[in-house]
Length: 240
Image 1 (spheres, helix red, strand yellow):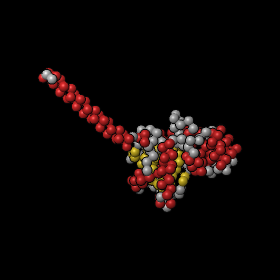
Image 2 (image 1 turned 45 degrees about the vertical axis):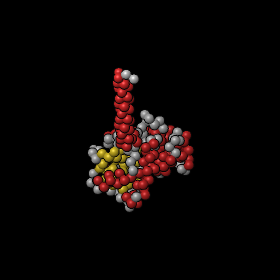
Image 3 (image 1 turned 135 degrees about the vertical axis):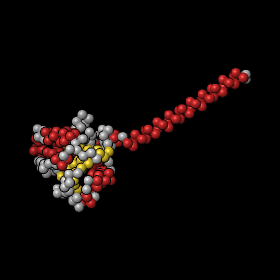
Image 4 (image 1 turned 180 degrees about the horizontal axis):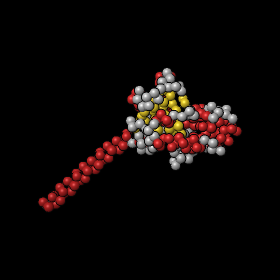
């Protein structure tokens, strides 16, 4: 092999080394950002990119609490968790079966220190059954079965057609004629719209969205996303 051929062979070998090095660098850097995004992206917790705890309290958070709100727990609790949610949202179901279930098992709930209020925030542009599901919960609430319908729909989230909702009303022992008329006539459509507007005015950009309010001091904070109960405990502690 001539000196010229040896030089060409060496150069080709160096090129392969450089190419292999660059490829490994791209894979490593890309993997780093992928893992970083997987752990921090809001898409893992909510239906939008809005995530985390935001200590910037919404304006007049206490005013979001209304007399007709369905309350889970002690109505006179000093701290209220306002949940703005969507019955068709998978992250809302995750919150229902995760943080909310843990809340109901916690001393905050059993001791009457913290209660939960559910507010409607259907994302109609991506969840076609969410609006009627929201109305159905309020129609059931009219007959004293809001939370029973709430649980029924989250536990059967893949079946939220009007026919399904009518069936749940029957299973819960509601006056089905009254319930069906309420749902068909859109009796609570304006209430759903009002609560959706409340969510957006408080800073909600996706579901689930929580406003946690100390009703005695008016201090508040928000959590956006299906985070574990430990994050809610930290938020509660921050406004005591």
